[in-house]
Amino acid sequence: MNIGFVGDIHGRVLHAIALLAEWQQRTGRRLDLIIQVGDLGAYPNPDEKLLNEKYVRLDPAELDFSRMLKAEGELADRIRGLREHELNPIYFIRGNHEDFDWLDSISRHSSGTVTVDPFDLFRYIKDGTIMEVCGMKIAFLGGIQTKEHEQKSINPEAYEKLLRQPPGEIDILITHDAPYGIGTSYIGETQGSTLISQLIDNIQPKYAIGGHYHHRIGPKMYGSTTYLGLNVLIDLRKDGALRQIKSGCMAVLDTESDHVDFVIDSWLSHIDKDFEFVSYMRKLGSHSLQEGSNG
Image 1 (cartoon, one colour):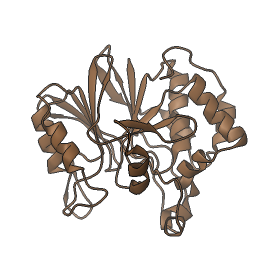
Image 2 (tube, rainbow, N blue to C red):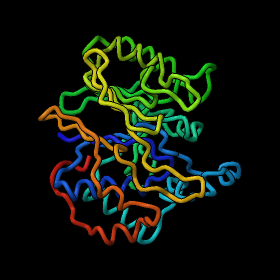
Image 3 (cartoon, rainbow, N blue to C red):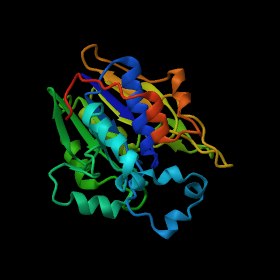
Image 4 (spheres, helix red, strand yellow):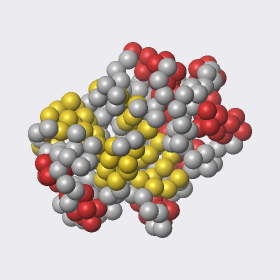
């Protein structure tokens, strides 16, 4: 079984879809499960404040989530074809840059996961959910640690639920925030969350995967737990030009060999500032991978 992990996207869902499709085509391996670690940029109906936000004005692709929800014509056909023939659903948790009210409203009556788009490509996973896949238990916790409780904060009820899990019961812990001490900010502050550190210490998952800090971290060992912090998908320069997809914004766990590693291949740079989804997918071709389930 191959599990793919994707770092912070910040709205650029079409870039992420292309990344996943090309990785599968180049490697000839199917991603049986795909997990995105928050800051998907799930804003279905951007308001005036968001439309005029600095980085959105510099790069409209930050609103591609909304564009995907309303897709028509060849854009919709391409996304639908990828979902039907190549890509399994992409499960995502909340980060600290999402429409929290919308996510709450669509998941209020869900037991754990809910489809958010007309293609059944992206599925939101509520905090505290534990998913069992092929004998593995995967736990999910979105949000970040904050001084005062906010919508973007770690959910205390979900946190306590996961904290009560027996040591070693959880195979993979997915969080947006990272354990305390994973780095230092540009103003000298220690990065990471003491809550996430405590959670890892208590439940001792085999793997812990997170994002949020926009650089590649690890693999680092926390006791018996291997932690990987994923890079951001794409950075934006101050002049608005897009850099290429970042090395280490994706990682893959092969459960048969029990090996996890970052994707750092040179072809990642092909998805750059000139990327346009429909044209890119035409060029990539539609060589479907028939192995594995469609989820």
